[in-house]
Image (tube, rainbow, N blue to C red; front, side, top):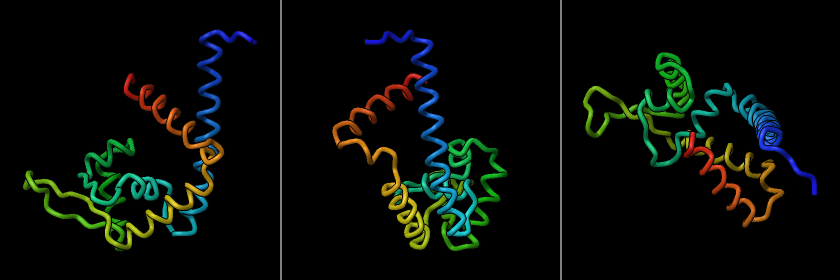
Length: 142
């Protein structure tokens, strides 16, 4: 058995994460181009799941962009009929972003495509559950 020190192990884990990101990004880029979307618009559709509503500000946080960038992206998605803005249930000043039925259909295509081409598909169900648990633990600590 080869011993790996903590620094080397951490570097190797980052190498794997970057390789996964590159692979997933390339797959989504092809799908986005086919659908006439930018990478960021595809990312927004991914995050706006059925029934999970959020404000433009929250979406900007998740996409790691400023609010004006998120707002203009939402404007373009709204013009394409993929999202709609509705009044916030509590805050009269805010709007909630929802996927339209067309947006849900496109998001479902993204999910289906991603699932079919996922590097995680090589893992059995139990391994994917363990990986999810480990990733959640890593994210909860950051």
